[in-house]
Length: 69
Image (cartoon, rainbow, N blue to C red; front, side, top):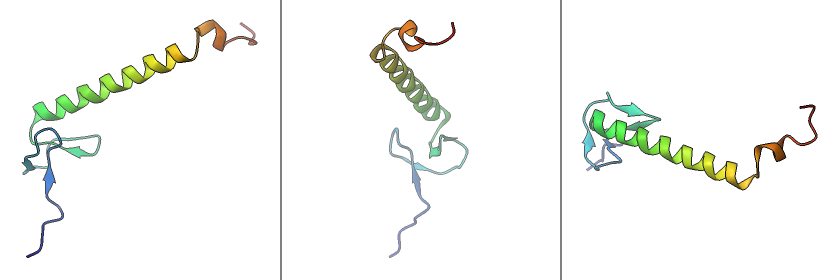
């Protein structure tokens, strides 16, 4: 009994993805709602990373020290 290698599963709910309609960032989803939920999570994760990198590197003026302005 061979398994279907092309079977895709929704990373949000784990259901098999029947249609190839909902693809975001290389991931397949069972519905538009789950695709949008994933996009929202990725967006908030990237924003948290930006905030953490900005607070860890000091003030904005400190990064431009030694420049012409």
